Every structure is written in structure tokens, then in C-alpha cells.
Image (cartoon, rainbow, N blue to C red; front, side, top):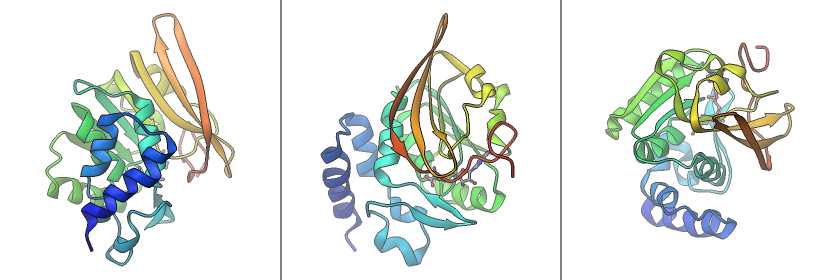
Length: 213
Ligand code: SAM
């Protein structure tokens, strides 16, 4: 299978066609081998316009959703980013292409071990991983220029807002278990600016400041 061609097609028909315009996001989506982050049996479907299962009842997000959330983070090469919900590690790799350093937290140890193996093999040396409840954030390493939550939250976890740098952006799906809206929250000197984009559907953010287990 010509995966490079599949990626090109994905970028044209799923991302550019739906309004993803940031050239650095599009370049990262063209480069990162998404098929490496799914099981062998699903590799041929890796560039399809849908999420795929990665085990433990979790999913690798639809390519468009990965691109849209990354675009909303407005990253620069100096940025320090926190990701909650490593999952397959695919979104982590996209972030590692764009930011200086990525801190990523996953609560399911088996997923984290698999993701780390893949990220190491692809030589993403600017990624640090932790197995924990990410709704508490990673206070020792903050503040962060960008925070991305790749699971659906019932409300915005307060520790994540606290760990945003001034000017930093938090991107998070918020809503009920079945549907959420994507929020971009920017920290300013005197408070937060909230912007809501389209609807989405993510697996549950489970933890202290998320859904109960
Ligand atoms: N970004 C991932 C990717 O590219 O494969 C997709 C992530 S999947 C939609 C959501 C992930 O969030 C799952 O792996 C789930 O275990 C994880 N998760 C849910 N609640 C969490 C929490 N409190 N802390 C860390 N990870 C959490």
C-alpha cells in the first residue's frame, strides 16, 4: 500500500476540503505515518475519514479532529505542550512535529507502553510520558503554552486552566457522554477567553476532574 499517497489524499479530501488551512498542521499531517499507530489488521484503513479502535475500548481520533484540535492550539516551535489522553500516540507525534516539548499523560498503562514504543522508534525525542490521571495536569512541568485534552469532559478541569501560561490555549471537548462541543480557552492576564467550535464525540475523560470511573 502506498501510504504516502494515502496521506496526501487524506490531507486534500478530509482536511483542506473542510477548512484546515494552517500550513504547519497540514505538513505534519502529511508527514506522520498514521498507519504505524493502529494494529496491523487496521493499517489499510488508517487514512479513512473515521476513528479506529486501539484496544481497551479506546480509539485513535478521526484525522480531521486531530488536525482541527491541533490548529486550535496555535503552536509555535518554542511551545511546551501538555496532552491528556495519549491513546495510540498519533496525536502526540503530530504535536511533537510542531512544538518544542510534549508532555503526554495516559491513564491506561498498556496503551502508554505501546504508544511510547512507537514514538521512540520514530525518534520523537521531545516527548515525555506519564501514566496517571491527566485531569490533575502535570503541575511540576507547567505552565504550558498549549494543553490538549483528547477525551470528552463533563466540564473544564480547573487544574488545567491553572496550568496554562498567559497567552496559552486549552483545547478540550466538553459536554455529555454522547456529544460534546470543542472549546478553545485562552488565558489572558486578566482572565480567560472561551470560544466554542463545532460538535464532536469523544470517549470519556475519566478522573478526579472528569467523569467518575
Ligand atoms: N489522541 C489519541 C490518539 O491519537 O490516539 C486518542 C485518544 S482517545 C480518543 C482518548 C484517550 O484518553 C484514551 O486513551 C483514554 O484512556 C485516555 N484518557 C481518558 N481519561 C484520561 C485521564 N483522566 N487521564 C489520561 N488519559 C485519559
